[in-house]
Image (cartoon, rainbow, N blue to C red):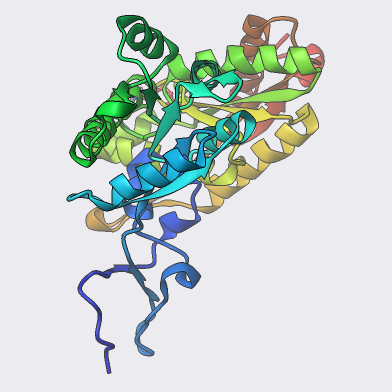
Length: 366
Ligand code: GH3
Ligand code: MG
Ligand code: MG
């Protein structure tokens, strides 16, 4: 018999997207955010059902409070108890390093930060978080209502500031609500600016920015990293035979496969029409060659299945690989070397991987 399900639970079926690293595919976020480990929320399933049914309870969002004064924490905690709308869990960090670490953890939907943090300055902490591209919105709490403090807080990256003596439950709740809404809007804009809308992967502009950033990081710490450029083979024939919608589905199929195969620290982008770029952090050329061969073999093994159209499409890719520091002295050289390796893979007959180190001996590339 089917178990009774409390109203606050939603039912969702298992989904293959659960396996993907969804930070690479934001279009999967809506689905994945509803899927939680059974151990967290309890798992109820009918014995006859082939799919486990997972019940998800909406978790309270967490707000971080950074202040060295325990009395202030208790006061704010009490104010939270009077909220009429969404309820939040409030966590407390009482010192600079702990506050910064937790703020950068991504575990919080918002942060309340004291302007004066013991001997140190809350704004300095905020500047550090902003420099680290922390997306969590921060509301600064101050003892003084002056324009200087207001402007200094906004310049440091605060989304709002409140004067402690004026705070009421209503004012705090409204400030949090506005800050969270603004942060969602900013996130949507960030996504529009950095993501490709067909596949949900990073777009070329963001990839170029990250590539330069990784180049500089690798240079500073003397660490390797690799770049893989992937191009789908004879992709135009999918468009020509079945139309652009099927072509788009093939792109998403390849994007899912690549995103699901890389580590969380790696970056995957749609770099052009049917081209993808992958930054493999801390990977030597040999390691990146191995990964690229795996992408190549897996895609060849996993056809793009479109049941609505009754299609099972075999898709293959060619890839070029180059590594820092072995194959290039500048970012442009690295891109050029990877591109030439990819071109050579095409010339060798497609559905294969070529490393930049092979080019010197290759008559086609030479
Ligand atoms: P090769 O094996 O040499 O790479 O051949 P190919 O057919 O994959 O390469 P070609 O450069 O000839 O064709 C790429 C095609 O990709 C042409 C273009 O119309 C198509 N394309 C580019 N962007 C998109 C897109 O967003 N959606 C779809 N469906 N097609 C696209
Ligand atoms: Mg192609
Ligand atoms: Mg191409």
